Image (cartoon, rainbow, N blue to C red; front, side, top):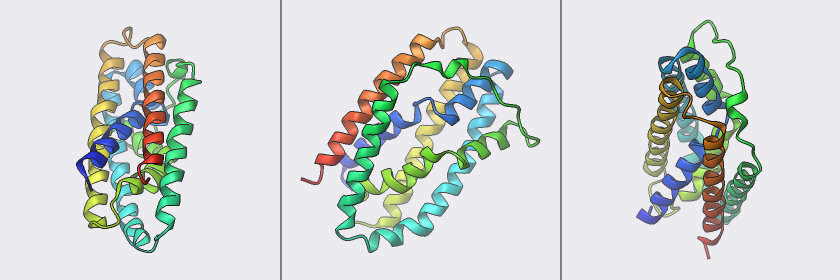
Length: 203
């Protein structure tokens, strides 16, 4: 894997992580209602869930890539199309994540809530099943590259989800709908640019 590909993956991962989706929604909603500690427990739960996702990817993805051959470019283009679609969806969003109410925490508390949310989040399935493979060099060590990208995504998710928790828990008034909309617009443009770059990378 080249440095260029790794940096591009990190940029794409940051854009995807900061998108207000199920995980960000639950972190913000609980932090606003119960304080930053609740949001951070959600983040810890999502990280535990990401470990499960990465284990699944390691078990199946590395061996699958070995037999992909010409289908590697097909998967790359599918991943590029996903990034562009997600970017367009963000540009059309209205920054209404703050208007959504916090669901009740399950019996296991906020940690379990975060764990359940991340396991049922289709965006994470696409990250490990469609995005990460695009940045793995078919000429390199698949397993090591997969672990590197998976761990990098987890670190990025921890940092930005925690920032959401602190922002909502300690300065909820700063996290206005207008600012969330700005994040959505910026992320959407980054995702569209990343999708175009990914589609043209193999040429």
